[in-house]
Length: 121
Image 1: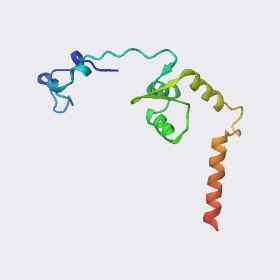
Image 2: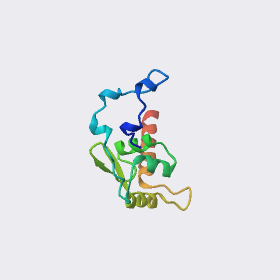
Image 3: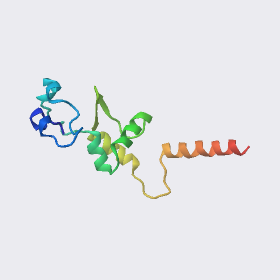
Image 4: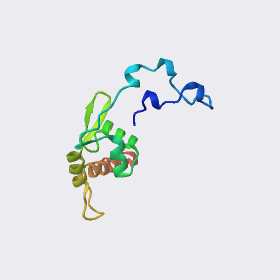
């Protein structure tokens, strides 16, 4: 959630040193009064998706970096996920038994097995 200028404590009211990282006088006015509009209903952010899947947002960031996980949209420094992409990814990951593996997992297992064989020679 975005902190607005009026929500921040004045530096004179702080009791512990280092409680406020940005000095009151130096905060840019554009940041101070910026009003963010809510996301469209078909988009969610990484924090909401991480909460939905009970994982940390950093895991989603690593997945984006390595090309795993659901498709995402990058606008500037912001990352969003479309609900339809999340549901498609969840459907792709659905399994009927614990012995089923998806293609990515199978490729990883094959590569690890080949590496082990090379080390043994």
